[in-house]
Length: 483
Ligand SMILES: *Cc1c(COP(=O)(O)O)cnc(C)c1O
Image (cartoon, rainbow, N blue to C red; front, side):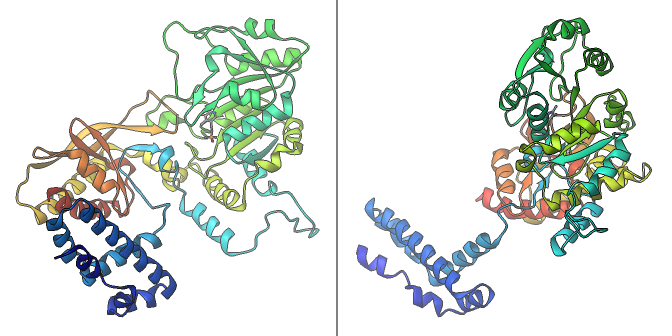
C-alpha cells in the first residue's frame, strides 16, 4: 500500500464526531472541547504515521494504521478528555511514611478545619469587619485571641508562612541595623530558605558570633554595638551539632537582651503546642514555653507539627507585634480567608488537650502505636496479595510485612525514628522501579519508598480508602509492566 493511502485511512474529524461515543462525550463536556481534542488526537496519530513513513518502515506503518481505527481513536479521545478534566493538583496516596511531607503538601487538615474552609468559600464571612460598629475591622482579630490563649502571648498575628514571618520581623525591627546570631544557627532549610539571605533581604546586617559548635552568652554581649537592633535565635530544625558543643539557651539570650534593651526573636520552626515526649520523641520547646521564657517574638509554621494550613504564626509582646503589623511588607505577605479559616479550625482543637491528638491528622499519625500499625499492614498485605493473585499466577512477586522506620519530616526531628510496620513488595523477575513509577503516574498517584529492590508501603501515613487506591493502581500497572 502506498504512503498516501495509509494517511488517507485516518478518519476525518467529522467521521469521528458522528460516532456515538463522540456524541456522548459532547453531552458530557461540550462540543468545542471535544472537537479540539479530536483534532489533537488525529494530529498526533498523523505525526506517528508520518514518522514511520519517513523512516520508510512500511510494515510498522501498516500495523499502526490498523491500530488507528475509529474505535481506538475514540478510546484515545476519551482518555485525553478524562486526563484533561482531572485536577492537575491531584489527590495523592502518601505511603512514604514521612508525615509532614513538604512535597506532598505537608499537613492534612482536621475535619473541623476543612469545614471552616468550606464555610469560608461558600459564604461571605466576618473576615475584616467589626460586628459592633459595622465598620472595617482587622483580619487578625478572630485568630489573635485564640493564639494568645494557647501560647500565653500578649499579641499575635499570622502571615503567609514562617519564612515570611522571619523576613517581616527582621525588616520591621532591624532594617539598616545589626542582628546578632550564633554561627551554629546560620542554617539552610529545604527550598532555599537561608538565614543569611533572609537577613540580607530584610535589610539587616548579620553579625555572627561563636563557632560552629560552641557559643557563650559573652560572645553575644561582646558583639553588641550602637548598631545592634536584635538578637536572633533560630531552631536548627533539620540539622544537629552533636559531640563537643555549647549553646546559649533562650533564657540566657533573653537575659542578655534585657540587659542591653534589645528584643529577642525566636524562629522556632515547627511550632509545637504539646509535649512531644508523649509521642516517643525527644522533647521540643513548645511555643508557650518560648513565650514564657521571655522571647519578644516567636515565629513558627502552621503546617508542620502543628498540623494546620501553610502559615507563619507570630506571637509575642504587644509593642513589637504592633510594629510588625504596621510594616508595609505585612500587606504583601498577608494570609487569605481560607488560611485563617483552616488555622482557626485547627487551633480550636488545641483548646481540648484530651481530644486534640485524635482530631489533628498529623498528631494522630505521629501517635499511632504498633498494634494498629501491624493490623493495618497485615490488611494491606492481604489486599495486595489478592490483587496480584487475581491477575497472575506467580511472576516472582512476594509481599511481606516488615518493621521499618517512619519520619516526622518537614525539617523537624532529623534524627528521630518512629518505629513502624511496612508492607514490602519484591519482584524477582523484573525491575521494581518500573512498577513504582507506574503506580506513581496512575490516578490517583501512589507515592512509596524504594529500598533494597523493594517497594515499601509505610502504613503510618495512609488514610482511609488508600488501600483500595493502592490495589487498583497495582492492578492497572501490572499488566502494562508485564507486557
Ligand atoms: C521550616 C522552617 C522555616 C520555614 O518555614 P515555612 O513555614 O516553610 O516558611 C523557617 N525556620 C525554621 C527554623 C524552620 O524549621
